[in-house]
View 1 (cartoon, rainbow, N blue to C red):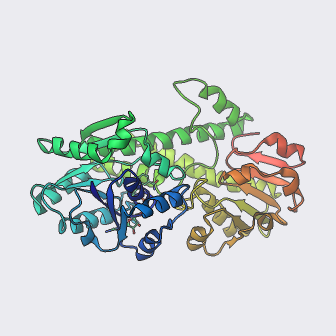
View 2 (view 1 turned 180 degrees about the horizontal axis):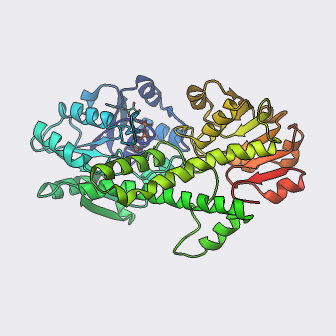
Length: 437
Ligand code: NAD
């Protein structure tokens, strides 16, 4: 099929390349010329494992074109809209400027029979409104919503082999046309038995925010237990192991630590609260305000813990922060808990050095006043305290003996409960972690 992908960020670039890999002819469009140039040269514009190899593979086939010229989408049967929906500057609601503009501009190049498919995460009700925009501009064209569940760090695998595919389709006869078109797009993954759920538009929009709200709640639940463990002298990692054996609870996403961040969970739960309020159902998701508050409190607690181990005074102390991205295997620093803690410590007078395997350029753009070090051993040299805030594999594999020869004080704060406490204490380190004695 001929497919267009509008918006080539963390979602769209991977989606475009994956659609080409599935055998479709893809044209990707972004307003950011630098991103388009990188992709045209077969280079990922951000760090995502496997994306470089995928781009090399599909570039050789000639099935992926990228451009800043929106008119290049003409003739595509399906147009995926993957632009950003960040939090608005003036409140919790989602900023729909980009989605509205992308779809409005697209209508100038659309023909009857073509299908616009939203993948961006939007407040419930947006798709119905945009379906009307499309219908009015181009009678015979349709709009569907196909929410995306990929995880950064696993984006290629999640796109090529998702755990489910959800289509929100319009009512009436259009439902059949749209479902058939999306079935053709996803023929290869569907043939492997991946579940497909076909719903109306509002259900599809809600599936995405409900999933993210559940995940955020699970993380904040265990972090709330960590708060309790801290005051009761208990151990949250043992608690998580013990409750996680109950299949109804499950152990995944129960790792206590510095909490969630990134370009999705925080803004999605806030936008959900804002939209629920507009719909008069704010009470139903008011608990998400607590989920958000628990999450932010972990960052505050991390700074307090640093102060405790630095003998009550942060000013002038040398602190090495390991990790700047919001999660390992990504260079995304949007609402990164690690970078937030680094900035808070710096504001309190610490001499902070930040290391990250991939995210230093993005982190520097966001927090230019912090000191960054690309060499891990140089970053650790002379530290009064080391804070592991993003659990990259290379930090989990650190040798406490070797690191001990580099630092000024053998003090480590494990913000992700990712290290072996025994290994570090045996090597003479003061080891502290969130939710543990
Ligand atoms: P992003 O900021 O990385 O990418 C958005 C891209 O859209 C940018 O490259 C931007 O230049 C481009 N853009 C903006 N306006 C445009 C226009 N009019 N025409 C063409 N391009 C335009 O954001 P992202 O992380 O890829 O997220 C995109 C959407 O997908 C959001 O709604 C997000 O919530 C959702 N989502 C993201 C993920 C994820 O892991 N990143 C997962 C699931 C869903």
